[in-house]
Image (tube, rainbow, N blue to C red; front, top):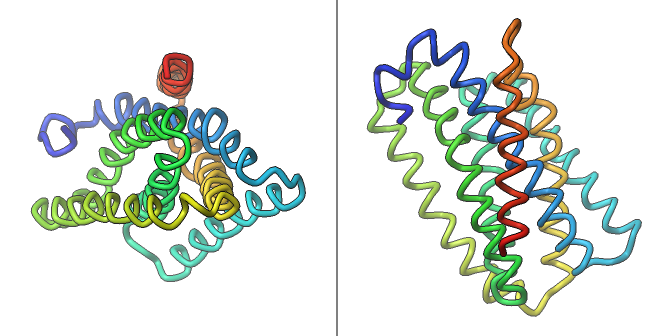
Length: 213
């Protein structure tokens, strides 16, 4: 969809793209509130340890953002998507081994959030004159790494509940940082109020998945 010429127009930039960004942010917040934190503290119930790991996730992603700014990394959204997707996939494999119901919801939310994230990352890379074939190759490589991380999580994290909880909480902290540092500011559009509804819709999708699964 992001590669279609029509979706590179000013209309997209002013309305649809901001709505899609907000939609992804709402799904991410839903994943944190409904899956990552509840499952994380279930596996790692120590209050101070759990909170410290969540904060560490936020600090780690802040450090990644500062590094990108210092090095003038040309694709911050793609890099952030990769840094977010891989630990989630690792945790997902472990969750399928210990809690299939919660893992199914997390898998659904990861898939949903990757749609707007992939859309925005494609727009970002192609907008910097990267060849579409190269961008597609990067996306496919990232998609293939997800199942690899999932298999590792299945065999390694299944018997290590504390490690699984730590990864879930670490990812939650990183997602919260990314949401309010990068995604929420980008979703706002002067004199336009509908894009922010994407965040509500995204959280609504997460809530429906939580209630149904």
